[in-house]
Image (cartoon, rainbow, N blue to C red):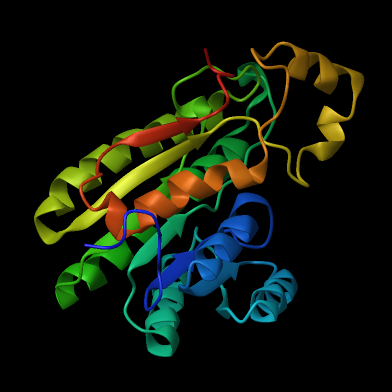
Length: 254
């Protein structure tokens, strides 16, 4: 067992999807600061190079790998490269995701497929490929799916997004049950509204400010507020936590 007061990921290999911005970008740095070697993945490879430099500035180890989570061949190649260059996988953060803000009556088949293929299909097959390797090597693993409060709370105008995240929560339970005997833990984080570069413009507007005033604490979360739960689930301290989700929303969904 590890020191209960210190989360240490030295010697661990982590793969983070959607690391080009937002949660994934920050989570990669959080895991690297805890000592993990991190495979940072996404489609905008120029951003991955910038993130690699940030991590190397504090003596971390980062490997940029191009990844399209909607392409199974891309997933397999990415995980293979990660394990070849950094070592067997210990931690996967299934973060890649997107949404299209539309009322349900306006959703096209193309928009529906785009959201579901990224948020659900991509997350499933990244988890599958990673878990198969962990199981084959007989190594304990941690798969952390980034869901949303939209998985259990209606977010107006985001019906398909909420459907995809609700499915991720059931996927988390199902995979956790199947892989429990192999010591592969599967969990989910459900963040609320946290200011990132993707939504900052909205929350600076009058309607965005009105939305914030409707929350119990009249504020947004900060991206650092995710660190504690992420590190717990990724570490030995979370070894008996599986099949569950943790909501981190400052009471926004109450």
